[in-house]
Length: 233
Image 1 (cartoon, rainbow, N blue to C red):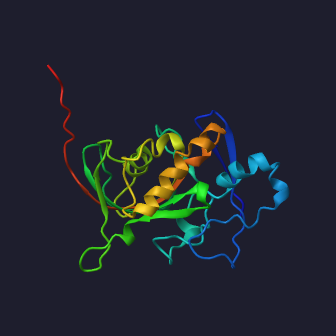
Image 2: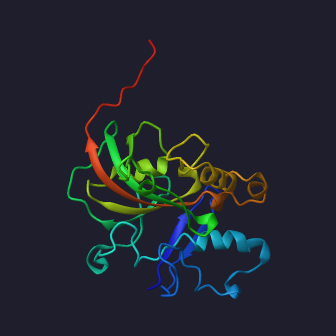
């Protein structure tokens, strides 16, 4: 199967992302670049940027959340979410619960990966355990600005029980080191942010690819609430 996706970046450039055939020898939960021969990368100076783009296409036959998922019946192509700033989404499972609104407290599980590091998984809620060894989901108020805007956009149109894979461009990803979700492990945080905000690579014009993120998000629950806005009088 070959899929072509187009991603608009802040630099107003268009990139073609190709889905290459799955190779059985590749490890699970990895990003497939094995099908790309060196001849497809035009020069050494552009190779790093090209690899970052190619690695954001994932092996669709290995879903992080649902190994027994029936792909042929429910998976559609990636589509750009409305008013998302370029976030592209692929619904791996359509939920049957309610859809959240701004001001609601949402609970999610996620896997986060960084395209510039060949799909390195920098964080997962399933790695966050309580005293009983159970995974701790991530909670936030939708529209509060607590999380990167790409996560807000991904969750806003989901239904409880749904699972969605999203490709988040740098403009909708991390703009600073205080935005959540933040990896709890110091070394993971350091690797994530020193890659995204690398001054040398940014100066070389790689800002349109360094911060591309891939998240698999499961919407666990929604608690209705009201987002309070303070107005000075």
